[in-house]
Every structure is written in C-alpha cells, then in structure tokens.
Image (cartoon, rainbow, N blue to C red):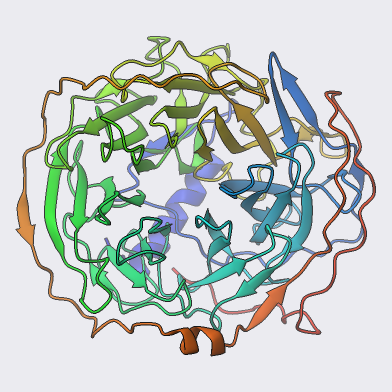
Length: 572
C-alpha cells in the first residue's frame, strides 16, 4: 500500500510512541506490517565520532558451533560504540572459503544514520575484513547480496529516496563497483533480488521486487535487468501484491515471487514464465493466492520497531525427484497468539497448490518467540532453516539462534538445536528500536553458512551489549567442518490449501526492455569503486576473544573525496 505524506507522518509518530512504551523486557505492542510499517527514511544526521575504542573481536562457541564476529576494525578488533544489523550473506560457489556479508552499519548508537556496511572472508568465515561502507555519509539500508555461478558478488542497496544502487565485486568482495549513477537501479522499500543461474535464455538476468513504497509509482513492483544489474526496466505491478518476501528461479527459467498477500492469513506466490525472454515485457501468467502459512507476518513485540520476520521463497534445483519444488518459510503469528512460530509450506506442482503449514520449531510453546525465520535449499535438495528463539529464556526476550534441517522435502524436520549462546536483542539499539528485519543463510551439500546479528559484546561505557554481525557454520553433523550426509528424496503427500490459478496480464508501464550487448556492457561507466586491500588470513582459533593479525589500511575509494553529508528534509 502506498501511503500519503500525512498518513506516513502519523505512522512515524505511532512507531515512535510504540518505541517509548516498550517494556523493560524489550517488548512492545505488535503491529501488522501489511497495513502499518516503519519506512527506511533519513531521520538522524551522521553521528560525530570523536574516538572509537576497541576490544578483542568476539568468537562465541556454543557446543560444536562457533560464531565469528564480522564487523571488526582494520586490526581485527571489535569497534566499541557502533552497531550493525540486518545482514545478508553470499558464498562464492567456486570457492566456499570466500564469502561476503552486507549489513546496515551505524557508526554510533547515538544516531540512527545507517550506511552500507560489508565484510568479506577468504578462510571460510573464521576471519573477516570490514573495509568500511559503500559510500561515506550516504544513507543506505535494506542490504541484499547474491552471487552468480562464477563467484561474482552483487550488493543491492536502498537510498533514502527509496531508490537503489547495484554494486558488483569481481574480487571476492574486497572492492565494489557502483553499476549506475546514484538512484538509477529503481526499486523500493524492502526490495529483494535474485539472479537467474540456469542455462536458459535468461541466464544472468537479475530480478527484483519491493513492497509498494517505491522509488517511483505505486503498487507492489517488479523490475528486471538483462545486463547484469547495470540498467533496470520500468516497474511492472505484481498481481496479488506479495510483500515482505523473496523470489527465485526454477530450472526452467520460470521466476516465482512469494510474499504476504492483501488479506489476513493469506500469502501469495506468482509466476512469470517469460521474464527470461529479454525481448518481451514480463507478465505474470500464474497467480496463486490465499496460501495458508498458519498465521500472519507481524512487527513489534520482541523487535519493537521492526519486523518479526519476512517470508522466504526458495526453489529446489537438485535435479532429483524433488527438483523444482517450491518452498516458503516465515515466522508468523498464528490467530489468537501474541508470539510467532516458524512455519513452512511446499508446492510440488509448480506453485499451483501448497501443502498445509508445518511448524518447524518443535518446543510446542505458544508463549515463546520463534522469530526471524529463514532457510536455504542445498544443491542436493536438503533444507536448512535457522531462526531466533526465546524458548530457554525466563524473560521471554533473550534469544538464541536455532537450527533444523530436512532431507525429505520438508515433510519431516530434525530436532531443533541451539547453535549460539543467548543474547539480549533489546540492547544496543542504534537510536532505532530493532535488531534489523532479517537474517540469511546459504547452503551447500554439507551445511549452511549463516549471517546473523547478536549482542555478545558488552560496552561498559554504556552498560549494555552491542549489536554486531556474526557468521556461523551449521550442518546436520554439527560444527564448522561437516561431513557429507546422504539426501533422501521421498515424494511427499500434500494437502492442497491454495487453488487459485487465475491468469493475469498486467498493464505494464514499461516499454520494451533494453537488451544489453557486449559493447554496451563494456562501455558502461560506473560512478564509483570502493576498494580495500586484501589481507592475509591467520590460523583459526576457538578462544572466546581471539585477536586477528593487524591488517593494512584499506585503499581509498576511487573518488578522491567523500560525498557531502546529506541534509534533505525527512521523507514520509
């Protein structure tokens, strides 16, 4: 839904009020993100930082699992006084030791001004380099990263105008090239994107969708890039308005978008079979609505100013009996409840129908929070799910990262296992009462690579913990060096709960999509390049506060001087 300026201002006042009445336990009243949401807007200037203290980086073991801090300084130490949250991870499929995490970076918790932070690793997540932000003193939010099959990384970043930029890295995340001048990647709030990695005509195409609060125009929008994220076609309205969700491509090149629909307890999954044809304007030829996920998306509660979870859609491309199964997972609030469960549905008929919702958290406790649920499909078809969980907390706020997996297309799931120590999600807020809106995982044949935000570090000067970014490796065998496990592939018996299959051809506002040529791509002029000097990796350690070998000072960005501090009036 597109809000008027007056409505948006009233919502801003509402959310500020909710933050003020948050209880001492770190919880606040819940709200429906489909009708009420806090938008990503400029509301604080960059903080003036006179001195940044450091402490040893945090390495947090829990049983067989070890979490390594990613947002560290040039010497590998924790930066005292900053905050980092809302992280997405990508892995180089040609070399699993190379990974990238993007996050919202707050240089000081005294300001809500956020920037596009990132870190990279070359030793499978044990040590991370945080070179800085994409652009100094430029407001950026909602980071989304991905990688193609060659190991090229991409980073989609939202500006305060709700427009975006796409960045590309060809050296494992050490440096980034901005692919278009400021704001010219289209988009909108809560944007997500995916890359077609199939061998069909859409190979390399990038697709993105947003939630209806857009860079331009109204409605829940879809956009496509046929030249590797450099140029983006005019937006197209997505039928059934799937919001706060993600998208993926099956082995036939069909694009699927999932999200919460326009009515309560109703999710949508839409398909475009011709988005892969560069000469055609994409249409959505299959619309499945009223999918029962067992509840609704929510905001507030344990995450006062943020979502309690998004919907994640992913497709099996294993090539086996479960190939092209479509899966959706979300932390939802069941009817009559005030807390959330991690719920899962699957489709074995190309998104026409979906199974009855299956609860993944196995504690059976209806008064506990199971939030920020996300998942990934491994190349061999195994499903890995992670989420925050308060089941072990007497105050129902302190949370741990939990993990479960399935080797039978989600029919059954493994007993849940905690993979992190408990942390206090309500501490370290950067003048914005939330720990972001999502976390992510990327799976391979033996396990999953997780990026999440937690508050393990303690800041004595503020007498509270800090929000930082962590990496942890999860696997059915436990720990960071898993051994391969066979993947079962039984065909599940489904109980269809969604049968709407209406064909919809939107009246597109786009003209014919430009088709990139090698010459056009070669001559495209990026507006900036962010660089950092690669660092040598050091030996892994399992101690609680190990210190990395000092790294050389990162190379400055190509543009000689940082951008001026933005001072536009607040957007709604």
